[in-house]
Amino acid sequence: MTAEDAVQKFLEWMATEKRASPLTIEAYRADLARFLSFMAEHLDGLPDMAGLARISLRDFRAWLAQEQARATASRQRQSTPDRAARTRARRVSAVRSFFRYLARRQGVENPAVALLATPRSKKPLPRPLSVTDAKAVPEDIASLAHTPMAQQRDGALFLLLYGCGLRISEALNLNIADLGTLASSGVLRIRGKGNKERLVPVLPAVRQALEVWRTQHPSPQPEEPMFPGVRGGRLQAGVAQKAMREWRALAGLPDHVTPHALRHSFATHLMEGGADLRVIQELLGHASLSTTQRYTLADEARLLDVWSRAHPRAQKTAQPREGTRD
Image (cartoon, rainbow, N blue to C red; front, side, top):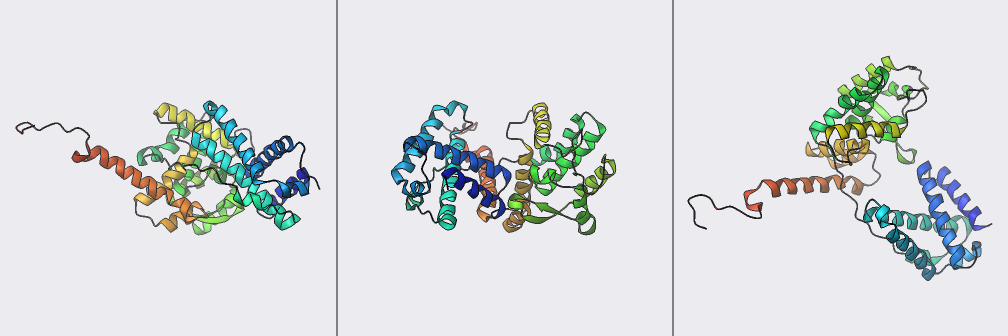
C-alpha cells in the first residue's frame, strides 16, 4: 500500500466510523497532501508504509518549520497571526490522527509523532451583538430581500438562528418534515457536528414565524428543504451571509457581525440572564464544557470593560473638582 492509498483509507474511515463532516474530510485531505508533498521532497522520495514509520522527530520539525516559514512569508494575506497558528495546529492534528490510524488499523507505528508539539493559538472570545441589534436582525434583513418569498424566508431563518442558537449549516439542513416534532412537542431535532442529534426548545415567537413561513413556502412537502433558494433547492449559506453583510453595512456594524454571531448572542444573552452553563452547553450542542465556558470569559471581559469606562476611580486622569486643592 502506498502512502496515498493509506491517506485515502484513513479519510474513508474518518467519514464512515468517526462521522467527520465533509468540510473536515476535505481539510484533512489537503493537510495530509501538503505533509506528504513536503516529505517526498525532504526525504528524496515519497515514503512507503515502512518509510512512514521511520520518519523522525527532526523530519516532523522540519515540516513544521516550513509551515511556519510559509505563514510568515504570507503574513499580509492572513487575517490574524492567531488564524495562521490555528491552521498549523489543525495540520498537526490531521497528521497525528493519520498516524494513530496507521498504528491501530495498519500496524504502522511511529512514536516520534507523539512528541510533536502543537502550535499554540489564543482562541478569540465570542463577540455577540447587543440585545437591541440581535432582536432587529430578522425584520431588518427581511426588509432588504427582493421578493415576498425571500422576505418571509429570511425573517424566519434569522429569527431561528438567534432564537435557538443554531449554526447556519444546522438551520439550512432542516426539512419541512422536521417541523413535525415542533408541532407535537415544541422542540426541533437538530443534526449538528458529527451528525450528532440534539433537541432544541423553540420559543413561541420563533415557532409562530416558522408556522407562518410554512404557509408561504413555495413547495411545503415534507421532503423539501425548510429554507429553499429563490430558484429552488436548498438555500446556500453564502446567500444568508451576503444578506447579513448588506444589513450590517447599512447598520454601521463591524465585520464580526455574521450569522454565527447570532449563535454567540444567543448563548451570551442566556448567560447574562442567569442560565446555567450546562444548559447552554446542551442547547448549543457542545461536546466539551470548556467550549461553552468561553462565554463566561466573554461576559467577564464585558463587565471589566463597563467597569473601566464607568467607575470614577478607573479613569486614568482625574480632573480636580472645583473648590478642592490640587
